[in-house]
Length: 87
Image 1 (tube, helix red, strand yellow):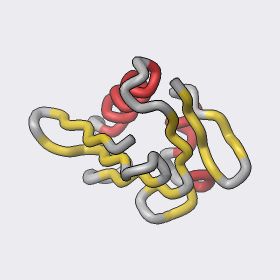
Image 2 (cartoon, rainbow, N blue to C red; image 1 turned 180 degrees about the vertical axis):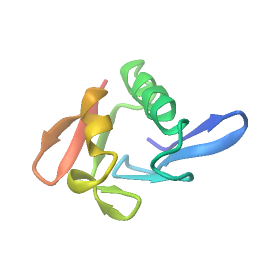
Image 3 (cartoon, rainbow, N blue to C red; image 1 turned 90 degrees about the vertical axis):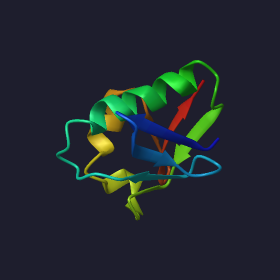
Image 4 (cartoon, rainbow, N blue to C red; image 1 turned 90 degrees about the horizontal axis):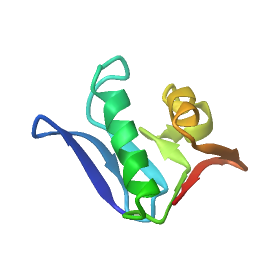
């Protein structure tokens, strides 16, 4: 799946086709990041996106990304070289 999460009409998070790369459009400290990631998780849980297997977040390994802890807290699982979430 491919998805864009908007907050106040502004794109905050972009999930690339295939669900392997996540790109954020604002700094890691931005208050809109967490709700945007949460909205993305809701889409997966609702079945709108079948599976996300993040290998890259903002161009670096998802496993060592500053957003890794937030993704794990939202239900992502640590797998070999990626963070996964399924519907």
